[in-house]
Amino acid sequence: MPSSTPASAPRPAAGLSTPAEPSDLEDAASTRSGSLWGWPIALGVLTTSGLISALVSDGWGDTWSWVALGVPVAVMAWFGLRRRTH
Image (tube, rainbow, N blue to C red; front, top):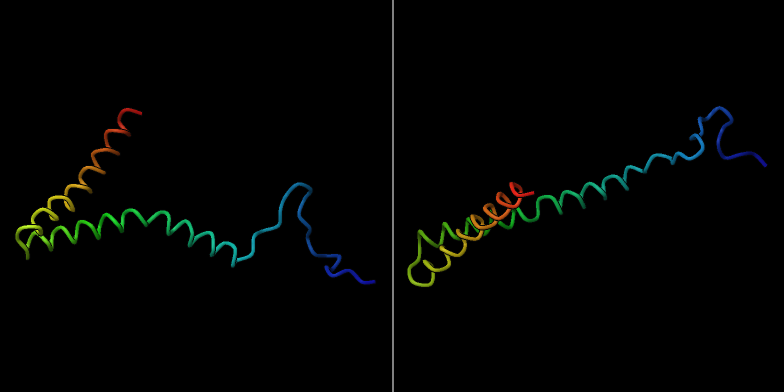
């Protein structure tokens, strides 16, 4: 019965794995991209809604703008201080 790989085809050395398929790499990259950009996008949307609310509304809109603009500042302060202490 003939072998499926030609005799001249290089084989991986013992203990080494074969390269991943391109589709596997694309799936891993999209997963990393989603986890990398998820929180920055959420903070950007929150900031944008706070700025628009501050410009166009009164009453509850002013309260929302304070919250929506304060959360990203608090997050940046938290991670900035946390990085400095570690």
